[in-house]
Amino acid sequence: MGCGPGMLTPEAARVIRGASLIYGSARAIELARDAIPPECEVHEITDYRGLRSLPAHAVVLSTGDPMLAGLGYLPGEVVPGISSLQVAFARLKVPLARAAVVSAHGKDHARAVADAREEVMRGKVVFLIADPAFDVGALAAALPPETRLAVCEDLGYPAERVAVGTGAEPPAPRGDLFVVVAGEF
Image (cartoon, rainbow, N blue to C red; front, side, top):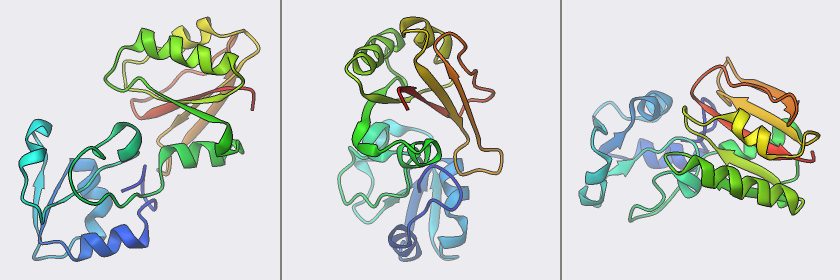
């Protein structure tokens, strides 16, 4: 689906238009609404553990980054949308070749902070996939005070916000849907 409205690729829209059975989160289904054929059977995912047992012809919608912290592990073809990594780095004008990806989404936040610090110290620009409980202040405190930090929220949505600060004065997220970029950019 990509990370927000308008981030669906033509190839992904073609696959959705040809689907007879679709599973996705409420947000993913809403993002795909215009491409879903009227006769298609659509189910909101309530148990992510059961996704491996879906019929082979089912199309599973995934928001954001299926190959970074999403549903890319499922069998079958992955048709990507425009990811939050691409959008965040484009908004900040950071070359993707400088990226180091760290996931804190549903994972050990302390380990993610340590990994992010290590990558920043190596000269990489960290793209950190956060979850609503991630503490940007804890990341900022682990970095040199002059390190640039950006909180990129609701990427692709009308309320999109990119707030830039430093380790000494970090930006704070206002909502639950955000990623963090840290390093020299």
